[in-house]
Image 1 (cartoon, rainbow, N blue to C red):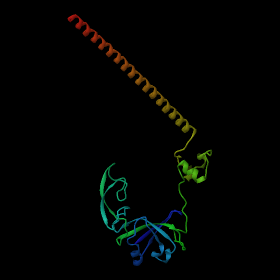
Image 2 (image 1 turned 90 degrees about the vertical axis):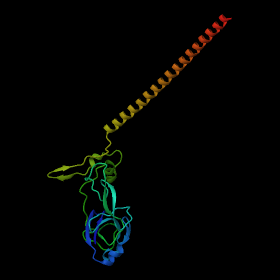
Image 3 (image 1 turned 120 degrees about the vertical axis):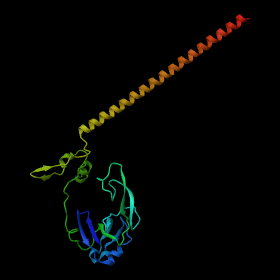
Image 4 (image 1 turned 180 degrees about the vertical axis):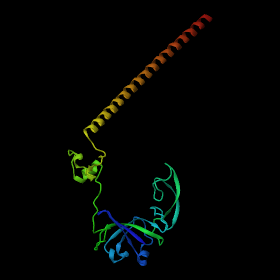
Amino acid sequence: MKLNIAFPEAGTQKTFELDDDKAVQRLVDKRVSQEFEGEILGEKYEGYVFVITGGSDKQGFPMKQGVLLNTRVKLLLARGAVGYQAWRGRAGERNRKSVRGCIVGSDIAALNLIIKKKGKEELEGVTDSQVPRRLGPKRASHIKKLFDLGAEDDVRKYVIRREVKGHSKAPKIQRLVTPVTRQRRRRRSAALKQRREGNKQAREVYFTTILRRRQVATLRKKAKDARKAAVQTKKAQQSK
């Protein structure tokens, strides 16, 4: 079995071969997202705590979280899900694909692990080295958090630039709040407030007009009834 061990703190990852059958048997029946002590893999991993993040069987079918089986099943998956690549199919289309359950079995060929706690010995190429981040943060709030900036500091001065073929490049800052942004918000808020006031006035005018029409209709009906009563009274007097 192959172990793909990653160390997020250092940004490193390396594949190790696990030839000990007893160690492989100790991994059986463990699930994705489960933690376990590294001692079960051998003395080399003593003191380490690993988290299982995934894996694949000998035919290359990936393990899917939530499928509580140690066998392969066929599920109706949407694009972008584990086992169904996002560039395949059409938007909104679902397809039935084979995936491996999230329980580790003897048919697993590769297991993906993340180091949650570092042990005594260094793992060559994983914990003994550091891979710097190629790109810095892009969102304004993330840049503020990285450099501990306040509300008055200009985020644009702290963007991490990188050299590319003799010139430097910087990402476009996302969710950047500038004076123009605040002006647009104020204008949008004022337009919304004005629209509400206009709707309120139009509503008042509408109900006032309806009330006036009802009053006029009531008066007309009363006048009509009075005329009818007068005509009937006149006819009754003439018949006598």
